[in-house]
Length: 79
Picture 1 (cartoon, helix red, strand yellow):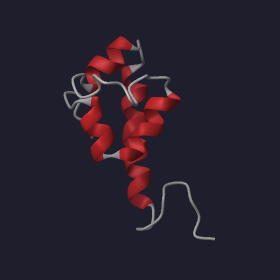
Picture 2 (cartoon, rainbow, N blue to C red; picture 1 turned 45 degrees about the vertical axis):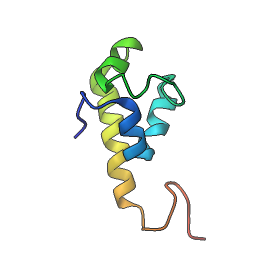
Picture 3 (spheres, rainbow, N blue to C red; picture 1 turned 180 degrees about the vertical axis):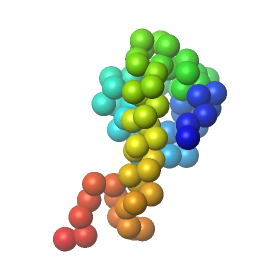
Picture 4 (cartoon, rainbow, N blue to C red; picture 1 turned 135 degrees about the vertical axis):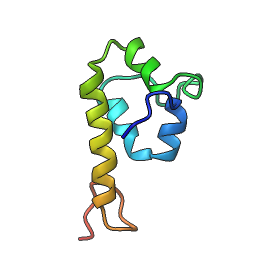
């Protein structure tokens, strides 16, 4: 579950698999100098995003990464 009060930059650093979600939703948070000041809730509001859909996508990205074999990059095959 995502803590909406967590700063975006902290979330992306802690869980890099969420970066793709920010990019897919056209959030400009990746590389933004104030990403460590804006919470996830702030970012959702700034980008007029569907809150539930965005949080669901973040949760899904984190869940999917937990299913990846260790040592593998998300979306990459061993073959």
